[in-house]
Image (cartoon, rainbow, N blue to C red; front, side):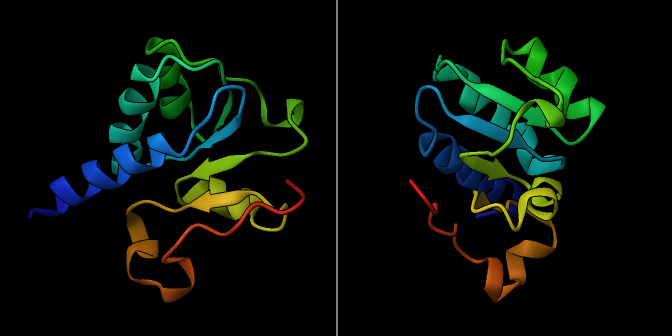
Length: 116
């Protein structure tokens, strides 16, 4: 299996973790490029924040609602390395995809949601 296949499968699996009404952090990177369409296909009502203009634009083009970071006090799920860095201490469930997290044992699995 190629690295791109692994990224696509990880992104699709992460999209399946998302439930209607969740607050989602959208990171930046090649794997998020697979995550956004997989998430949009689910047709859920979501509130999202994005770590880059590129991700924000791509998400909006797919019909995902994107808000400024300061509009949300917490996230239910964060996908991608930059969102991980932003929300690490908030109790958010983290799904690092691609990048340096792929080989870091401390990031090998999503953390549990706290207070939920």
